[in-house]
Length: 111
Image (cartoon, rainbow, N blue to C red):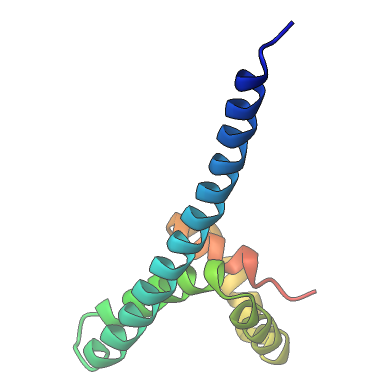
């Protein structure tokens, strides 16, 4: 037989881990969203430079925001389905892109 106090502590531990798991998920989502927005804004500011650093920053920011903001994912899917030629070109060069850009293309692949 297991003592009653052990049952209570196990239930409390399971409840607390679920609570902290959800709050950690929300914190990670919020951080991704904030850093994504900051990267997109910084990328727009840096865009006129001759080096394509601004474009890389925008793609990185969008990849962070897509994981945290499902509405943005749906909007990017709609844009890619509207501009099918550009979407097909992006899909063809997908294997040459870094991991974060590949994930962005996979998450926003139009149906």
